Image 1: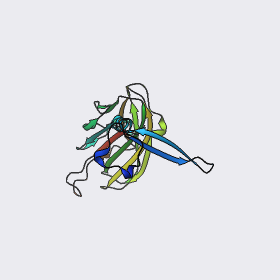
Image 2 (image 1 turned 135 degrees about the vertical axis):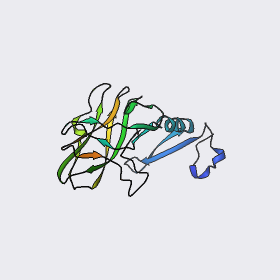
Image 3 (image 1 turned 60 degrees about the vertical axis):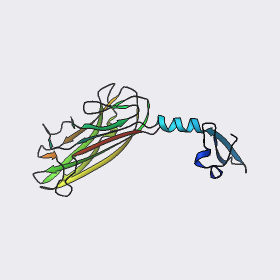
Length: 194
């Protein structure tokens, strides 16, 4: 099949031999154009379908203050080159990954509390300290929902876990089931973007 405009194609007319054009200005008044086959496009979409999701649905108390410890999540779903490990994910292919974490903290006392999250890798080495994200201040008997996102370049074989640290042990991970009966304590997701 020759190159055709996407607007001229119908769903039934697209096959493995179809070519799609991508054009952009060349900076001198014209256009640069490149074509990609439907086969290559389809394979790249399938190839980048690496994802995983873990959750914790029960209360988790920290053993000590000012010490990072693993948040014991369980695999909910995964696909592609990402598999579940004991408390997170094992990376199957080098690439760039978006990693998100959302946790619900609850304190039984008032005053200033430091809460930190970071990513740890126990397969190859540590993920840089720059991935540590912190949140401060917590009121007595109040929930604090804390979400963050990281963009990380990861390697095949790395085991990614979510770790947390609190400045006082009266802070624990706990789902806010009063507002949402299906609330989770922690959610930890990953997907490859390149």
